[in-house]
Length: 394
Ligand SMILES: Cc1ncc(COP(=O)(O)O)c(C=O)c1O
Image (spheres, rainbow, N blue to C red):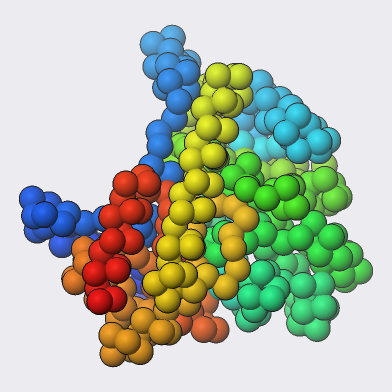
């Protein structure tokens, strides 16, 4: 069957191959003394708090299951707006918030609303692979710009300025980033946005890890800088609701009807049950649970990263948010005689029953030298993972 050129332009998600192999092996070793430990998964090991679960049950019992407006339930847009004000001191009116089926749908809507065929969008290398594929799906071209540890693996205003061409439409950043857990300094984001504005471009910031920050310097929303910045967000990470498929997009006023029209046609609306449930995320008890879990994520980071470093897996930049460690594995590849992070990931899987993510999908510059570890796993699992790495290191 002839498939579209558009679909052909979307690269495979290679890490899913590693994940599939890990799941297969996990079944084989499930009853052994060393069952598989999954440090490859980019989602919280927690589920939604009690009140959120109860709100979902109630919505189903009450039959509150019809379509909502394409932009989402009004009260939910209001609660998100209040959250921005209370938690981040940012004035984000509800009318600019569009509820979506996860950040993934928000990214699709933003790309389809703003990108024409052949437009270029600048992104850091490394970055979350699907983001460049959302650009491709809109027939744009993602331009990956290699970044360094000194730059916290983020773009700078200088680099954006240098890379800008007549075809450039804008930038797509993620702060904190997946795979590095590092954020853009708010001053640098302001400077980047100035450059983008000077070219009449668009600044898109994927803020899906907003709220999951461990350092006061970072953990701000770009929406506090300018109401022309477009922010993508989600209930997946801070709110621990990956499979509920709920997120949101904040756009300038002029873009609301455009995104609404696209959302009406492409999605009708996000899950109604999930939207009713998400209202309970903002109850004081739920927020207290989320904050307690944020402390747990921080404790895991504070344990795991020094432990990796001691084992010769250096993490060049301390992550300030999310739940990832982007570790330089060159020393390990040399020591174990393997060719790059892809082979090392398989070695760790087979020898130590540890599933980790090789750098391959996240870009091309130096990604063979890096592994991504996810710390969205219990402290007991992280400790056991460190013990197994120690044993393998000899
Ligand atoms: C940076 C980034 N953006 C977007 C997504 C997609 O998230 P969602 O579950 O909200 O669609 C992810 C998921 O891991 C991510 O890491």
